[in-house]
Image (cartoon, rainbow, N blue to C red):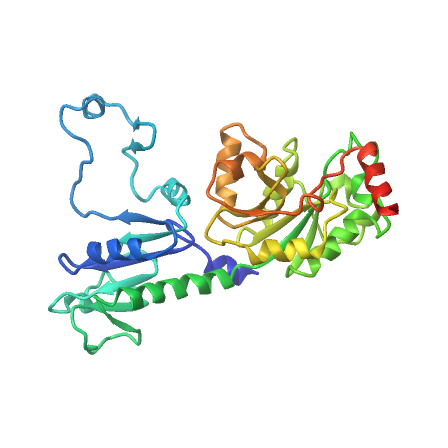
Length: 368
């Protein structure tokens, strides 16, 4: 899958598009119209070649910044702004933009960002040596297509619908490049059950094998998540495995370890203790998928997202590490506090069976 890894690198966001051009070519105006026209929640990044200052002289934040404080955070009940001295090239800048579904960038002409060139009246940008890579499209002030030095589409700058569709289609193609892989979580201690939950049989085979088979019907590849000392235990043996690289983190260990092997993938993560789960629920999850959010999950019986029957997008990896760094090792915490797609679920199918008492309840239900 190396081709996916190479094709899915990003600068600010997995779904980004840069508008580049000289002054007064309509970059900001077009960006504004795109933000208004998209149903996606778009973020905005602007590269200013001149000095800028978002603060106001005499304000408390300006006084403290001038005194040497950095970073400076100001907030109210609905907003916050973080003023830093960090260069825009910091890798952490992209992490801050991931809450958006996608990002429109203004500027960054020399970068490897996917670009749309905004034509100036003299078309001088055609000869700009800073424009190393060819753009994906050109936007100009004339309804007629000029002679272009690249074999790319041309749009009249008032054709916001056409430009928007072009960008949307570009991002849609990126979504299609994301492999959807399955992960069966089996690395727990099963302390409440008193025996290995992965090898329990509710009448349809060992849970690890049954869950693996379910995922195989909707995923390109499926792996069993477990500790290295569990590799040969019961029905795990012989199935493709990803060993936990992180210890003491519960289900998060398996999710992070899977992303470490295939960060370019979206991971459909299923716990092995869902004996009522059927393929129809997995199909529903994939049909309701929003690839622009951090994850797509079902609402559990408490209304909160169910983290162990969920689809995690590639951008969920840095988000999970952010929450881990903040002291939260529960993937549900990330889901609750992040933009995700939440779907109504079948509570019977989503029931976790963690104890011998709960197991007997399920078996009695099966026996009728």
